[in-house]
Every structure is written in structure tokens, then in C-alpha cells.
Length: 221
Length: 116
Image (cartoon, rainbow over all chains, first blue to last red):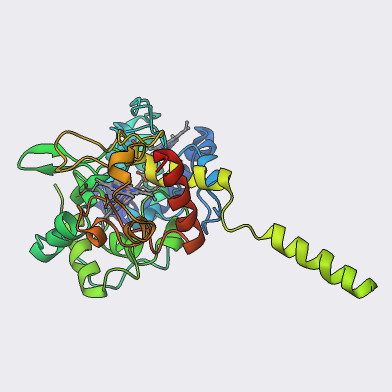
């Protein structure tokens, strides 16, 4: 009887710990693991973006992660870091070398801890616009007809992967990208990536279209 | 006399230090933004030229194709994208990405590539 009470006390205590304190602890371990694994050698974790010239960008060995917590869907990073699959069809900013599919891989517990840490890196420029991933016919029109975004981005179309190779693949964007981030990235490109080989569309596309476009892109499977 | 000399010196510094977009810079811009579709040498064979695409990127070395375009056509197609010359929207608009000087520099560079 007594043992049962003690047991349930500890069980409740443990569950509370899991749901509240554990994530913080996890994130702190994750930050340490990030440094130990030399992830900093290729990834910038402190904002803001500082690139001014093409050379600044080409000196980098990997995409910046200082707004990872705003960019990615919860749950995506833990899985990806344990089993990374190519997102960009080519090596980072290469026009000749295909992605070698050799990104460092983490054991799944470490991957979860690093993911928890990365999810704490957020940007105040993302959120509150009311963008949700959904089937959006108007957005599809902007994507496929008005701007042919598939010219540089792979996507799934009727079960097949198609599209250009220079940009990150948008196949599976629904599992990967936060819809609010997609919108913010399109509307305020300079905040996230001042120099990149994707054209700037803000100022060319009105807000209604940007919203439809972002919802469509965020829903690509 | 001296002040005239200063004015002369000063304005020559101004003139030489604000080149619109120098040749090396333009080539770098081309290789960064345009080569992904048009190819590093401009032959229309960049990595985004996939067989499933409705049209192929223009071969910028082809005098036959490029010769049909006026300077204004070239500038407006770079600024506004393929729609400007009733071509495919696979050719993106760079109006908000590149400065007017850089776009004029690219037009000159394309004329060199096609020798037309």
C-alpha cells in the first residue's frame, strides 16, 4: 500500500519533470553536443545575417541555423539529424557536384537533444501572420504559372519528383517547414538570407498572393 | 590654381571609384545568378535545365537567338522575367535582386557572349 503511494508520487514527479524541466535540460545538453560535434564549423548559430557580398556567402560551408526554431516544424530536426537525407540536390552552393549525402549523423538520443537546442533559436520576424499549410489553388497558380518556382526547386507532382536542382527541394516541405517562416522568408528575405541565388520576390508580389503562395508551398508533400 | 587641381583630383577619384559594375564583378554575378540555368559558359546547359521543363534556357552564346533581341528587350527580360518578352516565366525577374547598373552590365556581358 505504502509502496504504491511512493511509487505513484515518484511517477507523477517524474512525469512533471519530463514535461517541464526536461526540455530545458535537453536543450542545454544539445548546445554542448552541438559544439562537441563541431557543428559550428559549418553552421552559424548567432544572428543576425551579416553577408554582404557573393564571396561572403560562398565562404560558408552550410546553411545558417540561427533561426532554426522558427524555420522547422517541431519533430523534423530530431528525425533528420539521426538520419539526414539530402535536402539540397547539390553540394552547398555547387553548380557541379551532386549532394554526397554525407551529412554527420547523430545517435537518436543526441539528435533529439540537439534538435531541442536548435528549436530554442528563434527569430522575432516570424509568426503571427496567420499562415497555415493547406491546399491553396491560388497559391499553386503563383508557384507554377506566374513565377515557375519549380525552375529551381524540386517538388512532387503526380507522384514524381520534378523540378530544378539549384534550390532546396520542396518535396516534403509539409513535414519540414513552418508555414509562418515560409511567409516571412518570402516577404523579408534580407532578414534571413541577404545574399542568395534565389531572386527577391518581395515588392513584386502583393501580400494576398504571398500568403496564398506560402500556404501552398508549406503544404507540398 | 591649387583649388582647381584639388577639384580635378577629387573628381577623378570619384569617377574611378564608382564604376557601375566592373567586368569581373559582372561575370561573378552571371555565374552566381544566371549560370544555375544558363550554364557557367552561357550555353543554356545549367543544372536546372531538366528534360521535364517546358522550355530550355536561352543559349547566350547563340548569335542567332540573341541577335533577335534589342538592348531594351534584354534589359526588360532580366528585370521583369520571361513574361516581359512573351517568353516562359521560367526566366525569373531580377528587378528586386540586382541594381540597374548590374543589369546593364549583364546586358553588355551577354552581347560579348553572343558576339552580337
